[in-house]
Length: 68
Image (cartoon, rainbow, N blue to C red; front, side, top):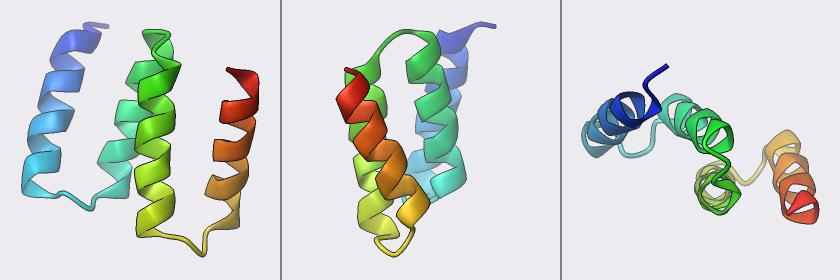
């Protein structure tokens, strides 16, 4: 893994598909592997905002914030 390239391509794809949760999930994975938990939390907050009825993501966000 070249995470910088993966992040670049995912962010580029997100410009075309700004509400694509799958791309955002990939960015969360990359951020975690780079130990950038602030970025992971930021992206997960965007996901929760896009899909507020998803309780699983709300719990993930709560846990991620507690673990920081």
